[in-house]
Image 1: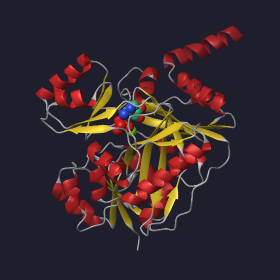
Image 2: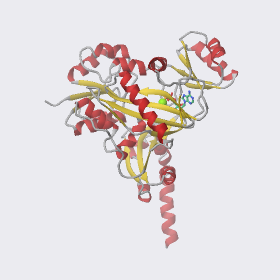
Image 3: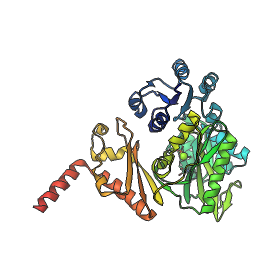
Image 4: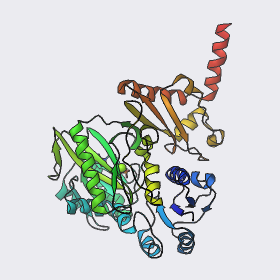
Length: 415
Ligand SMILES: Nc1ncnc2c1ncn2[C@@H]1O[C@H](COP(=O)(O)OP(=O)(O)O)[C@@H](O)[C@H]1O
Ligand SMILES: [Mg+2]
């Protein structure tokens, strides 16, 4: 019998996972509030409902053989109930740890994994007192609900701190204070762990952010090999300790400046710290769709379908890079807010043979900073690759009118 896998969340991660599942002969059901979401429009079975609608969720779980998620902000209390009747992978226990930055870091401390110094300030507790103890500069984050840098505040001065204290007095919320790491390199490492505890580890990706949003992922990462080996070992240990069934993405900070945290692992002049976990496919892992012989989605699909794993390895070129395509590009090509309906003009591809793949998620509305697609480029030179990524996106951001004017201008001057 065909196995029906349910996915909570119908964004691009859900869509790309569904594609890998279908290739293994699985049936897929999506649960997602927005009927226009990428995975709803491109798969044949979707339930549209809110993530708090217990009845609808129960019906959804009942129609599936097992359920996974691509979206992390589903109330874990509800998932604890739902998983009593039907397997949820990774489990609600794991999600409830990774949903809360405080629980997540306490877990790292308990397992002897390296983490930045932190302090949890409970809802309603005095942030002034906590800050007096913890010291500045630091980074304050809401313990739950944040993504792409949302819910984060860099506190450098007393004025910054006072401003946040005022905000919290009006709308109290639990906060975590973290020491500010002098970042040299950010990397991520994805581990797949099967239903019988077998683990595979992807090579380490380097992540470069712009405005707190992932901008470029590079493979291989530029840190020394011994550091990258340690990163893979720590990621594998985290997945093992959490007993994840599915994927665990581990985000790391690498710094040459000694952090306050004494848990940091030092190798060849680099201090290694874990930033956070995500028990699901990850934006940085899109690079595996071209750079590796099995993608992050293929590995997760095998785990869910209970198909034997194989360690993924890099293929083809020496260097790969993945760049996000944000809604800003759609808007700059075509200033109208409904630009997404007209799609992105990809004619620039003709000048960029290094760009080996472009994936557009099919979101119906382009918004600034919204992840709408990504591209992957390959080359034997890293420096060239980064230049290509910048130039390719610069070309994509030219307004359409200007593009056609350029062509017309070009024709005229040829006459
Ligand atoms: N303690 C820290 N020190 C220095 N930079 C940080 C720290 N925490 C977060 N950042 C920066 O902000 C980015 C987003 O923070 P993160 O905790 O990963 O939240 P998100 O859930 O938004 O990804 C990180 O990738 C890093 O660039
Ligand atoms: Mg992050």
